[in-house]
Length: 216
Image (cartoon, rainbow, N blue to C red; front, top):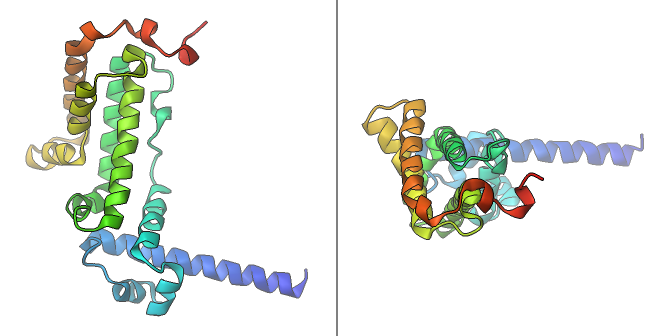
């Protein structure tokens, strides 16, 4: 092997290891203290690197936050349209959505408990938090697609989004001492009831399903 290529590979590996160590430190500190109270000096101390090294890899919070979120997300079960695989009935899809979102809340709880408040004072964090909410709204629309096509009632989407919010899950599990399973079952029942209230405005599931997903 060419010595220059070998040295470059070792340098790249060392840089990747340093970056991962910094991100591990950020993830831990943000869970313990939140984003606002975490400084670059704290990150450097936890990662055992110099402060300029942290800035070298992440010059600003706008660089650090997406990397941190991605670092955490890589360790979590994916939250996407695949959660509806094999489910064509809207009620089944709503229950699957509730279980998946609440499991996601549980996994992200150490960070989300800070994010709700800090997103209002940190624009960089607000961008990431709004992205998460936008992705959840898209999943809600996907869950409702068999009954309403591509245009589910805005009021229904808004109600479902509110009931699936982190604060709703936190109230049920913390204040009302529900298990994650109980909370998901309770909210799932409520979402099905809401769906039934809006059924007169919808066609039957099979008729309203987008053409690309209908069986031939």
